[in-house]
Image (cartoon, rainbow, N blue to C red; front, side, top):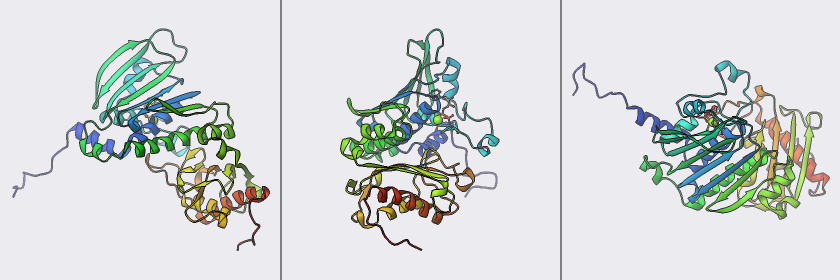
Length: 352
Ligand code: ADP
Ligand code: MG
């Protein structure tokens, strides 16, 4: 037994701390893809190209034509808790418009992979910068020729955390997660040309022409796109509740799948899942859908900041509303009226 001034409690070394933290932010390739795509969108990119190999386990590459970074910017970007997006807590309380703000994504992804960043600030004279980073350390920083914007490559994710690497699923499963993430952002940002390529094969690419219907066509194909029905309801048409507006596209009841993956729902532009929203959607379809069948849905909800907690954990996509019941009724009503208008529902007695 240790005497009074001896103890088993000791400080962890920096690398161990970083890898533990990384496990909380980067669960799998799709979580790294999410962070990189958010950075590209935050940098005002008009095009974002995502390329992955082996479901992202071997390589992830996200190339954008956004704002880019100077050499000092690239160096700063991989340091812990560095961000250009907020200055302090007051910025959070006033509701930040950016997707990421914790300043930890690049640092943490880089601590569990081999990371390369190539970047050139928009309209800058001269070369760009290439920084390589391995297991949390800067390996090299060199000038390089590159287009305006930023290319981030993540190789061998979890190469130095074998336990986590072991938990990765099959290539197909990991790619399904990547696909869902990129699809969500492509549908939420039809004004950005988003492409996804897996093992050399292009899975989809949107045009960036700011047309949701066209983005749905690019992502899900013709059968689904041609069945989509517009939902367009604002405040006074909705039952009482916190939502100011519900808009987007929902599929014909006959066009459905056995997975929830195709329910793409957004709150104030952020891809989230919420039980109340899903239940509202499913309530609107009612018995038109068989058990365990789900429609294709791309639905945007607008809600005043104070009615929902947006300051969610980076990995949490689940949100709660102050008044879940009212949100459920509002979503149900918005989707139901769109389906009814297209003669796709047997009208039913109003529920109490
Ligand atoms: P956060 O996004 O939370 O600020 P990150 O670690 O993801 O933290 O990125 C750190 C910083 O690096 C960002 O604040 C931004 O200034 C810069 N950065 C990251 N990715 C890009 C990109 N694709 N284009 C331009 N700047 C970027
Ligand atoms: Mg970020």
